[in-house]
Image (tube, rainbow, N blue to C red; front, side):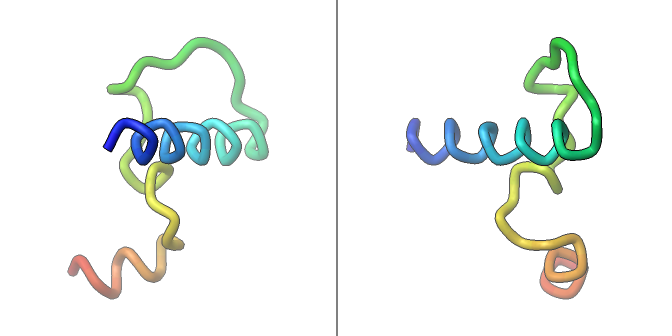
Length: 48
């Protein structure tokens, strides 16, 4: 479980950096879409 969470937040940090965002973020500042390996389109397709 712990490694999955770390990987998800590393993925989110990479995505945020690629968008030009930097600085300190808390767990609550990261949108769930950044944590998922799926694209936004895939998430909307399966979640809605």
